[in-house]
Image 1 (cartoon, rainbow, N blue to C red):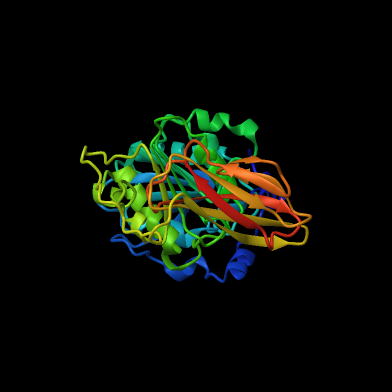
Image 2 (cartoon, helix red, strand yellow):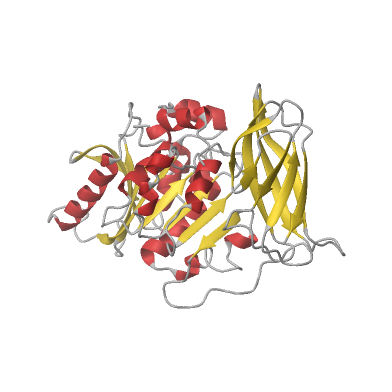
Length: 397
């Protein structure tokens, strides 16, 4: 079930001036990170043959061919510098990154502009006299975007030229759009701002509906919807996105080990990680050593549930419940949740609920019921009223 929050719908539909976003997030303008941290100092340019786009590239084109990353901005903003620090960082590692919208442009963008970027890059690679002649790897194309830009990326991810999709703090708004998930055939990765991200429930709903067998990665960093795009070099989102594209578009399995296996690089970090059908492309089996975990208290069995309010406003709230297995593995779990008087659940994700007010039960979904000893998962919900004072208990099977 979708969490069709009006706030999130507004975020993906509204055009947010980049200066106000920077002020709200406490970030810095894109010009603060000229060059990026990669081996090929990068900046942006425009082209008369690709109107209303911003092209991020190494200032001196390297001998290696540049894979293509096409990008939809947050708010579907037509300012191609909206995530400038982030895209410049990617380009500095040997990529051609093209954002919808002109530098400091105004208005809104469309998903067709991502297709235009791919068309242009392929044409420039084959055009004699172009600075990009035979400099672009047209066989490696990522389509990606943040918030509303992620919806644009979904819309064109079935383009046969696309080899991977990146969804950043975004998710489909309506169940009627789930056909876009069913037609996915290439690897996909989600990078989300954790339970406090307004797009979190939509992204997690999409995650649960991906086609069986599709290689997929889900990473949550608890920074909220704004991510780290405006930080120097795009912050942690810039670092991790670059690693992902380096793996998927350049075949770098060292970068891939950050995403694959129980002991993946991000598994041992501040990121919360989920994986589906991931292997390293060279046939090397992923590391199997489990990441270090804090052992559960001695003698505990079954599971524990910890309830917390993530956000509260007049008339409503968002809550998260963390479920942790005890000393034995679980094949399923059930949480009994007692809500305060006047509170009710309006939508819930990562669980199956019975009832909406008073004392309700929430059982696991098919994909998060099996837990190893000490392993944790979570579900969340949006409610009406006040979330303060709820209690949760857990039984396992």
